[in-house]
View 1 (tube, rainbow, N blue to C red):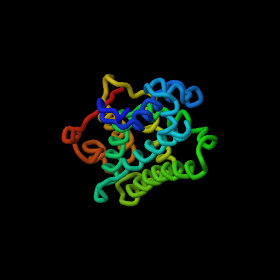
View 2 (view 1 turned 135 degrees about the horizontal axis):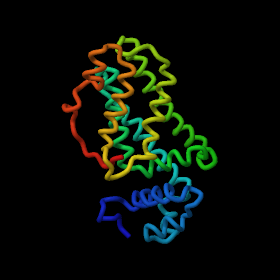
View 3 (view 1 turned 135 degrees about the vertical axis):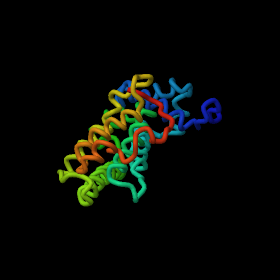
Length: 223
């Protein structure tokens, strides 16, 4: 069949999306290539034409998630440390909310990727994870050096921040009472009010801009 016209996805993209949902629901080991083929309405030989192995599907899921997270780091170099943390949190949570299944697969299967990926594939994923940690740590260190933040252990705080934000896939739900952007404001405000030295800034503008002045954007999920 030609690329899907109903949703604009190529057949390979459709296979990846279906496999992501199956892996999230059943686990990687609990999903067969036959299951993927049946769910997308193709025979298994056609599925193998697009993906030569199940592990290659999983790697594409991982690579997409890792690349997205690193891309979300990009900030205005002139922004304050608190603004940088807030905007990264907002982009990260909105992105996770838009593809919760991908985030679930990433963390559910994380302990086992050494069994399924090549050394080069594992190294790529670990490099991206290190970039995320180093960016967050460096932003916190920048805030400390400038006097914007209290002195703290940036290593511990960066690890805690990553766990807090990336782990949100466990409870983000569509059509709940809080949007991903609202949750980003809550997360960032709580974290930054513990870091900001200036009492006025800490109270009045912990995110760097007033909440009612924050730009809107499509928000696909809530909690």
